[in-house]
Length: 166
Image (tube, rainbow, N blue to C red; front, side, top):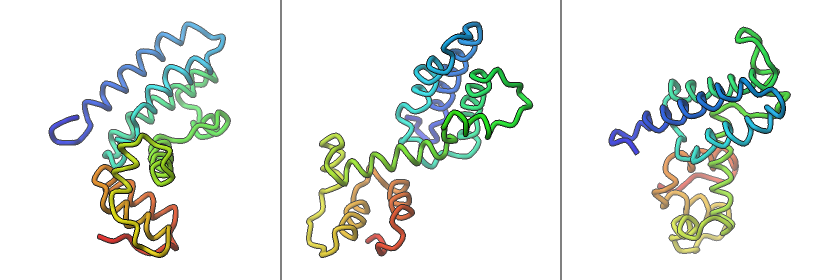
């Protein structure tokens, strides 16, 4: 991780690796979608929960990889609209992919199906609250691994469950 926590080098390496794979895949037209999914999307999605809250210019760089991959699958021009292609492939945009991955991670931790150390970090507070969902909000607020992106996401998923303890 960068010392300034900007994740700039992580995004740069990911973008470069994914574009290199896309360039190699241009010569192969059969089974392009499955190759793109297994090679490029895997690279974009690996560890992307740690990218929550990255600056928009870094998110846009990663989105450019996703857009290029969609154009490769459909042999589309650079000037074709990208959203219909992403929709047809059932691919989320990069910010939504990151939020989804983070939401799944938080859900697994809340239900003890994540890695033990993550779930324990989330559940380190005592279970003295009466309402279980309020308790999960409180637990999230004490878990440094999940601050602040997971807390914000968890709040947006359950807006009527009260506020997080600070």
